[in-house]
Amino acid sequence: MGVEYNPVSVEYCRARGLDVAYYDGFADNWSLSTLPVGRAFRSVVISHVLEHLERPVEVLSRILSAAASLGVERALVIVPGRAGYRIDATHLTFVDLEMLAQQAATGTSGFILERSQYFPFDWRQLGDWLPHHELQVVYTRNA
Image (cartoon, rainbow, N blue to C red; front, top):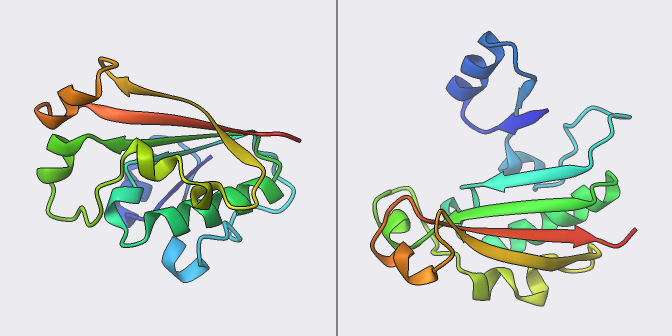
């Protein structure tokens, strides 16, 4: 199941038979309360979201806490490198590994940063020049 803030994207996905719901994290205070009750989730992917926020660490902490209460075991966070950050005027905060590794990012959710890598090449400096180079961070939760 996917959740998406852009209603045009939601309709596009639904028209192709995908299970996607509109989600406004701002209105929901990032508590994931609009997800179906009783539905099991093992993973959550937060892809190219955090850089659009003024307080991404606070939001990530809220999402991870909500995900933990839903039984989620793994979270994947994907953010652009510096060049990718610079090419989009809607990006508000540059998010890097140092920020995502802060204790404040996981809060009391029980998630820990398991691993990180840069894609498509695992070398951070490429993200300074290549706009489609990104950081991928995996958090896991001890049950």
